[in-house]
Image 1 (cartoon, rainbow, N blue to C red):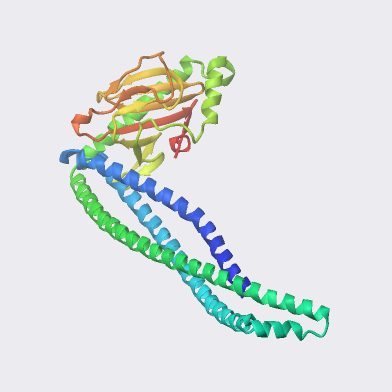
Image 2 (image 1 turned 90 degrees about the horizontal axis):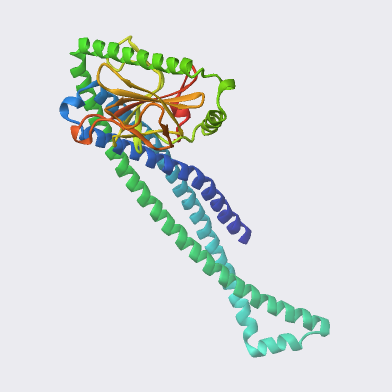
Length: 388
């Protein structure tokens, strides 16, 4: 019976260990999603209503819906783990309660036997009636064993009671966690409904502006073409080939490459609202948009270099927005949609050093940064390079 009790506790501890790994990963993921969702909420709240009904505002709304969907999925997984934990705790508690009943019955019998031999005359007669010395020793051992078993059972019962109290307390805690989680999930579901209503409103508004959307696509395509041309010019000007890199640039290039997946973000806090590659236009059916990088909504207007390098180009677009191209050996990082540039061509910059800024904070406009990474003529997905 004691072994069953031990196995039940060990099984529970093993399950807790396995669950804790998955649960901790889920909590980390949940917190990151909530953080990103709050950042997008703040970005929308700080944006004027005329800007909310823009394509940029729709990008933020779409990203917000995507985050909320992912968050609800994580909350469902968390609820499932909590439910499994509670069920296992209940099963363990049932096993312990059965064990406690059996221990008490066993203990009662031991008490009765011990009382029988504890009385002085019984104990004396028990020892004196031994046929020989060996039998006397065996009786002494038997009596001692009864007393030891009684004490051990008493201790085991106390430990089992403590374990049962702990199980009951843990079950109560899990029920409270599930209640809190259900409340949070319901709030997120309501929030998602409101966000989707906002999305539908923006889509209806933008569908009446098809001409302006087409013009915006042409402007965006022209900007993308201009940035690409400038990068290719920089490659030609610097004769960007690995064998012709100076030792310093070769080292920077090597270090940049070795930091794949660990580069800092170009803004201190941001959320990707438009991904790398070919994506469908959020409003116009059948229209594809080619993103050479990603677009990041930020709560701050400060833009910083993601790695040590040298400013290769500063471009002023017809729209008035500026673009900075920073060279990192055979790699380039590109920062667009800037309102202000704080570096010059040829200037060396350090990791996280400010290179420019987006809209002024007081302008209440969407701070969306265009960010690209190139390796010579190859466009790279920035999400594979910056830390997650």
